[in-house]
Length: 84
Image (cartoon, rainbow, N blue to C red):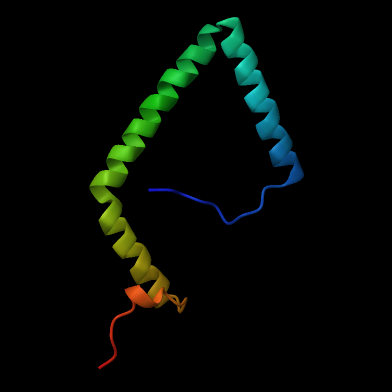
């Protein structure tokens, strides 16, 4: 499942993300223990998130569609129920 965002990041958020990437690269190049811990736990987090999405993903999509339909937002044509 690919996740995207529809919110625009501010200039400050982009700067902070860039600084973070550079700092992590520098720590990796230096063989910093804290960077190794961060990488290990990030892999564990991503693996857990993927397992959760695999287990609950279809139900979550259904719930999301219900909320979209009840809020008056138009759903994709393929997801709409046929009219009687």
